[in-house]
Image 1 (cartoon, rainbow, N blue to C red):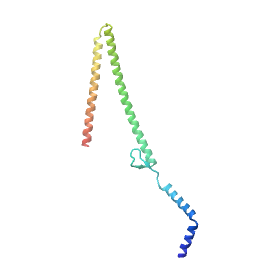
Image 2: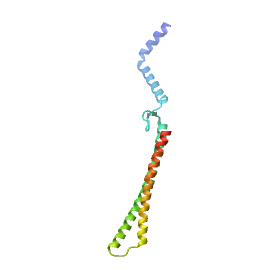
Image 3: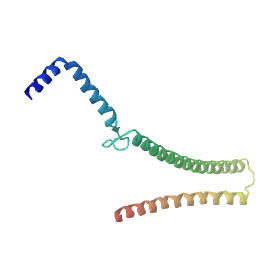
Image 4: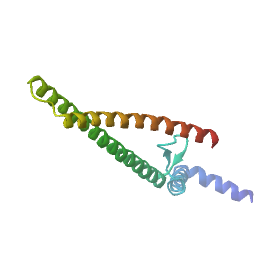
Length: 146
């Protein structure tokens, strides 16, 4: 048995570069096929994710951002409509002022419609502000209860 170990020792010493190459190849193969490449997650940097998980995470974040963008565009369109109404109201009041300044007669029906429109816009703005406060209170009470 001692003779076997002596021969093995001599063989290893003579073939150290070859044996080292075999060991490096084995480690590379095990590393390449046995270890999954991972990176830090985009949404939670404490978690490591692989390529498939990263792709799912990017898809989910993209969908969320697209939804937020759509909501933003809807809000912007509503704000633009409101601005258009306000500009139309200003133009109407300006035209009434010009006709009065030129000495023209005042159209009582037109004046009543303009004033009622101004009151309507004010009421709508007041309602929206109150609604925001009520919704904020509901959210705070729901979070306190939940």
